[in-house]
Every structure is written in C-alpha cells, then in structure tokens.
Length: 279
Length: 281
Image 1 (cartoon, rainbow over the protein chains, first blue to last red):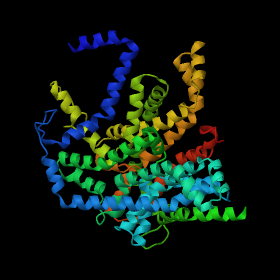
Image 2 (cartoon, rainbow over the protein chains, first blue to last red):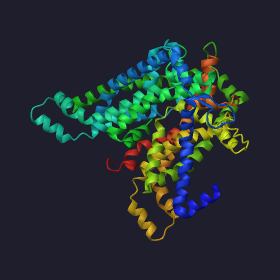
Image 3 (spheres, each protein chain N blue to C red):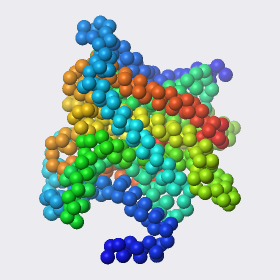
Image 4 (cartoon, chains in turn blue, orange):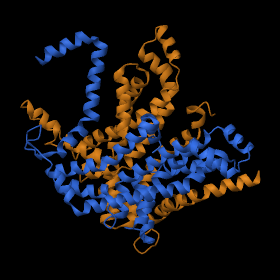
C-alpha cells in the first residue's frame, strides 16, 4: 500500500517535484523532528518503552518544574544578566560604531581587525583563559564576571551592525537639518539616531537573546553562585527525567520566540538571521 | 581634521579597552601560564604531558577526528542546500529558506538536548523503528559519529547562510545563459559557481572548524567519557582538577589549532569589502 502510494505520487508529481518533496521531508525530519519531539516530551507523563507516542499526556512536569524554587531565581538572574549585558554593550559599542562609520582616524583598520580577531578564538578556550584571570581578580562566581563573559560575545556585532546602520543614514538629511540651524547633537538625536534605530534595535535583540541562551561561559565562570536558566538546565539534563528537561527547554525558548516574532514582523526574519551570521 | 581624529579614537576607546581586558590580556596570560609549574617557575612539562601522555594527546586526535569530518560533510550538504534555496523559485524552496534560517535562533543547549533524545538508544529513532517491530539501535549518543551528526544540525544552516549571501551575488542571467548554451549542472558549478563563491565556502569552513573545536555544550552532554573533545577536557582541567597551568597550556593548543584556520579567516575578512560587497568597495 505504502509503496503503491509512493509510486503513484512519483508519477503524479514527476521526477523533479517528487525529489523535491522527498528532500523537504528529510529536511523537516532532520531540522524540526528533534524540536517537535522535544515539545511532545514536555507534555508527557508516562513514556513507556517502546511506545513512540506518550502513554499519558499531562502537565505533570510543568507543575513539577514551575514548583522548583531555583527556577524563578534563575529566571530573575538570567533576565538581570541579559539586561545588564545589553545596556552595557549599547553604552560602550554605539560610540565606537558611530566613530567607525563616520570618522576617519588613525588605526581605524586596526580597530576593525581587532573586533574580528576577538571573535576568531575558539569559545571555550577563550573562556578558560578569561577564567584564569578571573580567579586572580576574584571575579569567579560573580555577576560582574558573568556579564563580562556575555559581553565578549556581543562586542563584535554590537559594533558592526550599528556601524552599518549609521553608514546607511543619508548624509543629505543630516545636512538639511544642519542647514536649518540644528546643532550637531540635535541633528544626531532628531535625524541620525531614529534612522539608524532599526539596525541598533536588531543588534540589541541579538545581544539580549544571546545572553539569555549563553550556557557554557556562565557555567564556567558563574557556577555555582550565579545560576542562569541555561546553567540550571545542564543539571536538569543530568539529574532529572527527560520530560523535566523538555519543559525547561520550552521555558528557555519563550523569550526567543516572542522577540523573534516581534522583530521579524517589524524588520523581516531574513534581516534578523543575516545578523546572526556574525556571531 | 585633527579634532575628528581625536574624537574617533576617544569613541572607540571604551569598547576597545574592554576587549583588550577581557580577550587579549587573558589570551596572552594563558600562553604564559601554560609554561608555569606549580611554584610559578618556567617549565615545558605541561606541553610535554599534552603531547606524550595518551590521556591528553588522544583527546586532540579525537577532537580532530570529529571536527574534520564535520567540516567536510557540512560543506557537502550546505553547498547544495544554499544553491537550491538561492536559485530555485519553487514555493518549497522559499519555505526551506526561512526554516533553516530560523534554526539559528534555537538556544544551543535546547537543540543539543532535543537531538540527544532523538539519537539515544531509547530515543525516537529507535522507537520509530519499533513501531514496525524492527529493533534498531542507532548507537550514536556518546560516540564520535553522534557528535558529527549533532554538529551538522548546528553548522549546516550557518554555512548555508554565508554561502547563499555569496551565491546571491552571481547574476542569474549569467547562469541562465550558460544553461542556454548547453552547460550541465556540474559544468556550471565548477566553471562558474565555485570560482565565484569558493572564498565564502572557505570562510564558512573555517568558521565551522573553529566553532566545533571550541565547542563545549554538545560534547559535554553528548560526548564519550574518553577520549574527550578538547572543550570538555579543558573544562575538566579547569573546573574539576583546578589545574590552571595545565588548562592554560591546553587552551593554547586549542588556539594554535584554530590559528591555522583563523589566519585564513582574517586574511579573507580583510578583503571582504572588495569581494563580498562590491558596491562599497
């Protein structure tokens, strides 16, 4: 029956379309099968071997996870770290972005190169190197240490994306503002910043999401004092039933889904993922 | 203008200073610390151990045996995927394009856990075959091939994105005219697409290499106990044995492995404006 159906489909669609559908099936299974499976596991109460679908579906593990004290604490920690990381990155990277986009100064090429280089190190090696320094400066297990580790990841695209945005602001508009008597600062606030805002916003969203999901650096530097959601998830995966980990995964994905949907609506999903290439 | 120069430098300074403090100083320190013994004196013992003690060098060999096939397979799959999503006008191609880009937003630890539950011996692959009464153990979790499999999930979309932005720069009329004069797909690929996009391909291969050699979450959760991937070995040395000298030496080895790949990456990036973004160059 199955083979007959497949054969029928093959003749109905023609070789080209048939292969395309087949490829699409494999693509979906590989990239989204695991995620769908995880979503299913989060609502599974009993999952006896060798059943493919859960024997009993319930919210049991949701109740279990939401009743854990350290979950709320880790949510607060994650949020605090992400907000601090985003705010600090914005404060130090935006001026650099503007300067790189607009000013000609000695060593400009060198600075651009340095941002690239900082991003070209294998992550865990870099974190260990930072950890060695943090031991000596008593930053291990501190909020400052964790935020610094997160900022390491954001420096490059927090500079490059806004720099690109500043570069794309039409100079003629700024000149027009200056012509009617605006000061440079007024021009920046009234013309340049609003025009570059989408690029800056996209960069900020990356920073925020990148910080929310950062797991390994936080584990290495923050554990056991500073526990963000991903850090707690390591131990959930090791110590708890699969369904608890699945619930945790969904909780971790919520901010991403919300922000990506909102930003995707405003700027298009492609402009978002284009920025992700830089990471 | 002199004022502009000073202003530019002043505005770059804070982020640059922070970068020096949290990236470059630690790296230099790690290289130095790798040559220290317990009492702080100079020694080559750490490196001697890494390259002669099987419990260390097997980790390096093992890491390469996972990372290099990952890079190869990744390119073999990402290239056709990028070509398909860039040039095909079908509706499925549009959907695939949006869908693989979306996977980049999935938090790493979530995706790792999701993949583990598919390939574990009582995972959904096994359970699926059990529906038909076939007892098939994938035997992938906690093995090298399993790590390659999981790495592919993370890196195919990433490489395909870099490739497709490069592919999009080739004018379709050029490709169509080649088609019109009778060139087949392979001829078009090797004579037109490859020469115009190999830099992007190399770039993404380098990225994938550095990303996988410096990976932690995937091998930590889904890798074997021995031999270990370098990232996990480093973590053990640092967080379990508290041996900062040894961890520093190992980190330096990891940097050196990436340096070869990174050299190519930097060289290409410096030229990036010219070849990837012709309107700015």
